[in-house]
Length: 302
Image 1 (cartoon, rainbow, N blue to C red):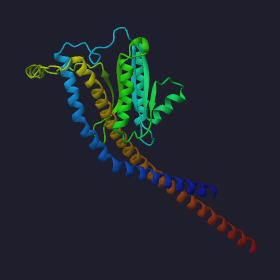
Image 2: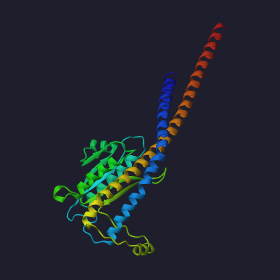
Image 3: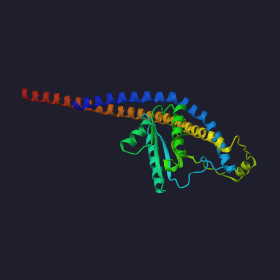
Image 4: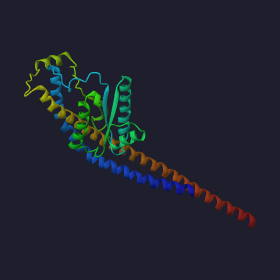
């Protein structure tokens, strides 16, 4: 009897969990279409401003912080984009694992990384381990707005523009999850500053790029124009990373909750079979005891 009560209790608790998992899956399913659309809509603007900056790097000889790192400064900044909530599978753990790998590589190169973390799960992880964090941001990781992108970009840009003797950094890295499709989400490491020139993969692409090389004239001056472009560049890139990370988080949560719901249902079926087997064993034992008692009485009467 005690075994049957234990099975019934486990079945009831698993059914409650299955309802929670299914509800989370339905919520994520209702959000994923909008999150994916917002991420895709932000990409053209971010790509356009990135291409413009790439063109400036390739076809000008300007000594501006957006193109050239400060010599002798080995201090770098790393921004990790995690999530506020759980139930998203390996979303946050993958970001943390990639971030730890990046920090180790930077340490091996003799650089001093400063860690910036976005998302309550990542903040909790590093604070629990007493890791030094330069700055943190929390809230709405599944629906990031322009305001949080401005706040993050301002903090990172201020750190980048400071001189080395005031704690400034010479490089900016961001670790995020890129949304490819509903099944595939890739963890990426992006070096935002200084801007790296992306070489053409084929000779034809290089020839085509040289044919369409733009000519730039800066008014009032190149430094003033680039000082205006730099904040927009950083903000647009960070905002795009936040949006694609949000879409990836929602997709990971939907997939994780779908798997959890299936596992819960399979567990309920397995427990139900064990409960039925236990009930049948108990009934068989009771029948055996009754028959045995009846046989004993009959023999006694004889």
